[in-house]
Length: 87
Length: 229
Image (cartoon, rainbow over the protein chains, first blue to last red):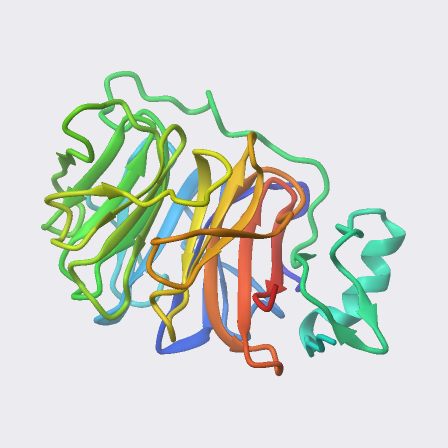
């Protein structure tokens, strides 16, 4: 389970319903992605911070949304690499 | 006798036992097998509470707790301190959703769409338990029969059996509750993970004993447990 920051609250969690080994964790430190059911994690979306929640579009699995704690919404269309501010 | 196999977590058990961070009452490895009970899945000690931080005055949401998309992939739902909101344009604009005609001001802690029925959405609230909509969020009804309390911080739906959900209740009646009839009746099944729970999700990873795993995001990190309570 390496790769997630220590001493931090996990605020949000999302999975790819078609491939449950793909997971995202939203934290104050940013967004982290696992491709192996949580065995290892890597930061994605390097500029994202103060995240409260994350979700995956079940019909477009590369489409990922996050919200910051104060409600700024970002969208990624490539599985979490590039992000666009929506609101 | 219950037997669960949890390969990913097994190796980490003894380490976290040493640092005293295991939720020892319900997490154990018996003869190499993982039994029901949440285990720490991420290296976390201590906690950072988010309430009261990073507030943006004038923001409609104040403090966001949850984000979810319906099964059709059309509508985003957002749970916040100021209620439930929906967006039909990929998050650019949001409208507040009325959950109750008689009560307002719900702090929405979790939003859980049914993965097979796009019109069916569940929300978990801080004050009034669980609400269910079967018309895409237009109307809602409380589905709290059997819940020991009304402060629900997490709500997980089984992707294989969407009538089966788990709810995490805090404060009065705290613990994990399970329903197998879409919220018709809840039964307490476990004490739940260590720390303040933020999100609860059923993940379609077989435990090897007929069930799948529940993942819990909490102030103590990411934890998981077989759902065979």
